Amino acid sequence: MNKTALFAVRHQDNCPECGAELVIRSGKHGPFAGCSRYPECHYIRPLGARNEGHLIKILEGIPCPECGADKALRQGRYGMFIACSRYPECSHSETIDQPDDTGITCPECQQGHLIQRRSRYGKYFHACSRYPECQFVVNARPVAGECPFCHFPLLAEKKTANGLRLICASKLCGKPVPDKTEEK
Image 1 (cartoon, helix red, strand yellow):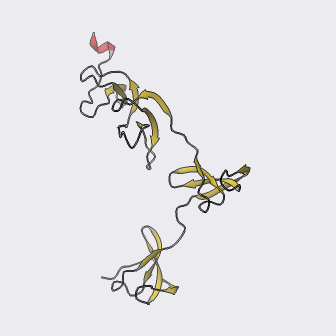
Image 2 (tube, helix red, strand yellow):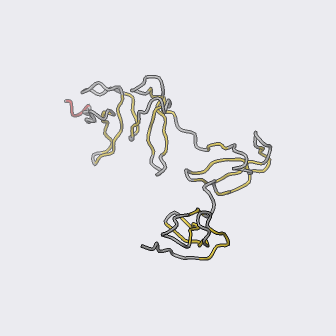
């Protein structure tokens, strides 16, 4: 079965495995150089830029603490970051968005604090600051309090059709906390 490609352009290199000519093809992860003798030879090599962060702006006058070159604002896989203008040769980089500390003690380890983090898909969640030692995670916004049913020491805000509700943050319980008006 022959693999189809969006385009096949001759490349100057030869396959290091069989010596046949390489062709440039396009796949779902971008362009790659593949052996023209496919499927007998399975050699492929990715083409294009590695994900090192696209340069947005050089920050002139702000030197890199490691090499002294100017710093630069870059857009990477997980958002904006500041790095040396010589990145990736100089490995200095800084995050722009520092995680928000909620000040709520982690209910699992009782040592760390819950901080807001962002997943690679752009969703926010709250996790223990002692990760990877403690892997407690809650997807909703945490609220200090105790569950009246299981006595778990953390509640979470959940959006419902009736507005914001507090629920138990324990995955084993997850029951909604009764409002003051419901108790009467």
